[in-house]
Image (cartoon, helix red, strand yellow):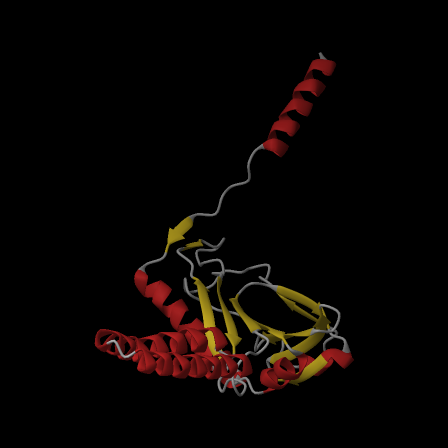
Length: 255
C-alpha cells in the first residue's frame, strides 16, 4: 500500500510541475492610451534634434502596444513600446526628385520641337537635359552619407557592465556607453535613462534596468525607464549622442 501511495504522490507532483502557470490578465489599451505612448516616443525623437549636418530622417517604424498585463496587486505590468529610425543624407530622395523634375521640364520642350520637326532643337534640348541630369547625379552622390540607426525603447529592460573607458557622458539619471561594431567601422552608443536607478551613476559598476520584484504600475501607460541606441559612423554617432536633450527624454518618464 505504501508503494501505491508513493507512486500516487509522485504522479501528483509531476502533474503540479507540468501544470501551466496562471496567466496574467490581459487588458486591452484604448486609442487614448496608445496616443499617450506615441506622443512620448515622438518627444524622445524630438530630443535628438538638431540632426548632424547633412542628415535627414529617411525611415521610421513605431512599435506601439495594444494591450498590457494586470499586475499582481491590482496595478499594471510595465508596457513595452519602441520606435526605430534611420537617418542619412537623403541622396536617394534627392536623386528621384531631380530625375522627376528634369523629365517634367524637358518633356514638353522635346515634344514641341518634335511637332515642328526641328531636329536641331531636339538635339540641343537632349544635350542640355543630359548635362543637367549628370549634375543632379553628382549632387546626389555628394549627399550620400553612412546611415545612422536610432532605436528608442520604453521599459525594454537592459543590462551592461560600466567600463570606465566606455563612458561617453553621465549625469543624474542618465549614462551613455559606447562600443565599436563591425571591426571598428561603426560605433554603438547606448544611452540609459532612469531617474531612480541611475540617480548616482558615478557609484555604479553596472546598468541594470528591469522590472522590480513588485512591478505594478499605477497607469497602463507608465514609463519607468528609456533606452536610446545609436549606431553608425563613430565620428557622427559619438558627437550626436552628446547633443541629445536628456532633460526632454527624462521628462517622458513617470516618477
